[in-house]
Image (cartoon, rainbow, N blue to C red; front, side, top):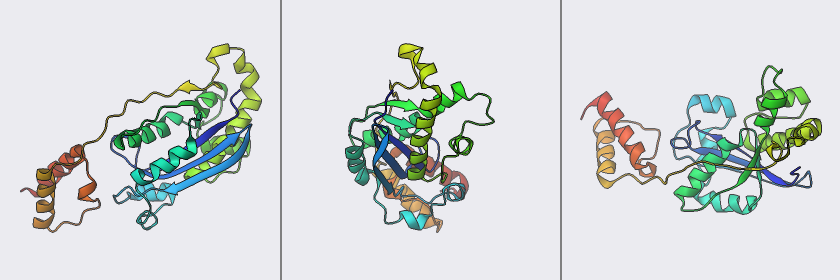
Length: 238
């Protein structure tokens, strides 16, 4: 069984790595089944948080204003992770956001991973839910939900408990074992920045209609800028 890994968890502005942004990263390094180090950071998404995200995470815009951007913080995070196996509850979600950020920074991020959610779905089908919060309550694992480092700590503890309960049974399946790392696959394409004409048009529309916007124009990608322009034209006209 894999007992040395890095357990990661992210808080984000939404569920789509192509459009949404990371706002917090938490990770714990586990060696021989014991937590040996931890890492966490807020991340400035350069946009205003939706109220539903504030309510879910408790993270507020003012906490992110002076935080580093993902491009600034990513090298330090990757140094912490090294080439270790990733563990997560729905690990592909977290991997996809990190890989997307890495691709945007012209960096490589390929890893193997273990998913506690997949293990729970196979062996705990009778439970009402397989969410991290519910499973922590079921196993009486201390947990402060929807904060990245706390979720990472709880997931590492959950993995230990799942391994104690189900590893021997799963190991009978040999190479198909859910407790063995598998290659994580997500295709990410690098974003291109907005064009000068897009930037000029957005500033013109904002100024003409005296708009207060909740994002930084300079940080938009070409596709994001195109959507914003279409939205403003549809609502306010030229």
